[in-house]
Amino acid sequence: MPKIQSNPNPEHGEIVASKDITINDEKKTWVRIYCPTKLPSNDGCVARLPMMIYFHSGGWIDHSVEDLFYHERCTQFSRDLPAIIISLEYRLAPEYRLPTQYEDAIDVILWVRQQMVDPKGEQWLKDYGDFSRCYLGGRGNGANMAYNASLRALDVDIKPLTISGLILNQPMFGGNQRTKSELKYACDELYPLPVWDLMWELALPKGADRDHKFCNPMKDYETQQNKLSKLTKCLLFGYSMDPMVDRQQEFVAMMVGCGAKIEAHFDVGFHGVDLVDSKRGSYNLQLVKEFVQ
Image (cartoon, rainbow, N blue to C red; front, side):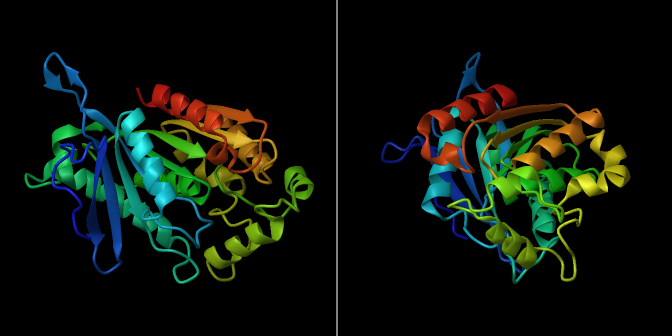
């Protein structure tokens, strides 16, 4: 992808600059990087900014980092945190089924690491990014990706990059046995239960059911317990009328049970309420800001 700008200097009054960079030509994966144009300083020197690798939502099958909504959301994150946001354009189902998306997530983590050790690495990351404060974040299936990518990252050498935390907004999990929240909100106007089922059917490996570990991590708890105990801190958001809220609460209990540090915020509302309620969105952003400091 072509670069939109070569440096984060403001043009036309821009508060945040962005540019697109190819990660893998063969896989057609790329990132859009966001950097504030007014960089904070410390004792006259430009302060290093935390970085967030962000995975967009869309139920595995839809959306792009180019969508105006996601572009504006990442711009807001970069401006208000402030932080460098690295938003990944990953491959979608059903053409590419899981674990393809997790593989794309690991690719971008390793790419970010490479920028630090490469003398000709990406300028914005090398000059302004804090490689000791890199966070994985996402919404819906993107939050699922952040969680699974963090587990996979334990099996590869990402030093000197450090994953400092996970930011999981209404993570997408499922299972064969219906939960109370799934049954109660089966006719949700935005995402009824058959839609969630279809998205999993299109995304999971062929022949897998919804108790596969990609969909239902609680079923894989015993084999993953050692890894879970090594995960970094986690911030999770959920809402009471989300059909997946019971799954998310089970996930929190699983994390607590293995000794992981997790901060969970459950509030009244439907799936995606923070997208249409500006007060909810601002409140969540403030919690993220406190989390990454």
